[in-house]
Image 1 (cartoon, rainbow, N blue to C red):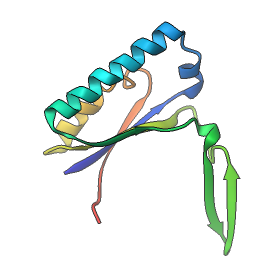
Image 2 (image 1 turned 30 degrees about the vertical axis):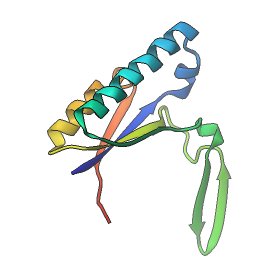
Image 3 (image 1 turned 180 degrees about the vertical axis):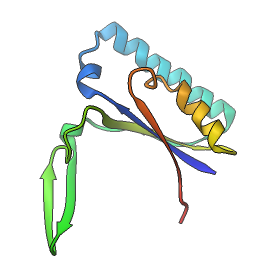
Amino acid sequence: MKYMLMIYADESKMSAMRESDAGAFMQAYGVYTQALVDAGVMRAADRLRPVADATSVRVRHGRTEVIHGPYADTLEQLGGYYLIEAPDLDVALSWAARCPSAPIGTIEVRPVWEM
């Protein structure tokens, strides 16, 4: 089954990291990504641009509304994702726990409903 590992973290804390800490953090992501590839479970992954670059669209009463920037003011923002293939939820959760952002943010694990 495919699972989406959605990475939520506080962008302001991430951007306030010292350069050396940010470099080590990104290096940890390289190691994590390679482990997913080596295990044969990774299907896709990408980092997202900052939430300030987001545009939200919604339709209310037949009218389209476009909102520049984040739709909701939240403590953590969606910063990226991994799409993995795992035999069950327990395996997907174990991969989520290994994500470098897990200690400082939240990794939402959601089964993919394939269409």
